[in-house]
Length: 264
Image (cartoon, rainbow, N blue to C red; front, side, top):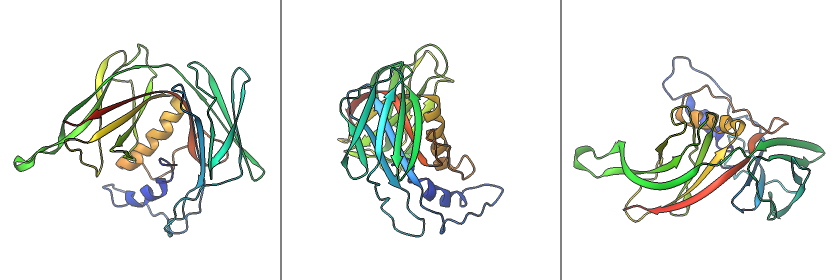
């Protein structure tokens, strides 16, 4: 729920951003929401579903995990994979490895209600390399050292409709920023996709790990909504999940590649 649990908090920040219309939202009484996040990829990592509840805004909640669900993933060939609760609220299956071109269907049975979602592994791009460059929008003022950021260089397949998600981990700590993009301007080309770091400032010697994912359009639109909320580019409304039942979160079947780089 790293992406979804922060949505309610993001809403509180929006009213302080520059906009012409003031929107009043009663955050203190916002009810807790069920959050489901599931992932299947082709890298060999275990299929994983995390179930939790978002915190009430007026409390210092740790977003408690939810136990006791029956979780299954089925592919379009009829193969059924049961996910076992290995840690409270975390359900996994080590035998399920995603295959490009297949559609995966998630089913979560919890307290008598079933939540469902589908996601397709579309295709795979080649992750060429990671680069370190100076961020032209930060640092270097008054003779100081320029701020560094990481560029993800990849070759986009020809044909519009590809969407990427990049998860950035700095010295073992995920930056908790949503990084997604489509191929409207990069179709069939090769160019770095640079990643902001938020409050984390890269320095020489830092180790940056990148998980590079090709995601389907439904997951992309959900994550883009979160990205836009964080940037203040949209009205404060929860992005529409691809999971049924009015929950937060998403289910993503995707390709995944990983690389590391040390900042020099």
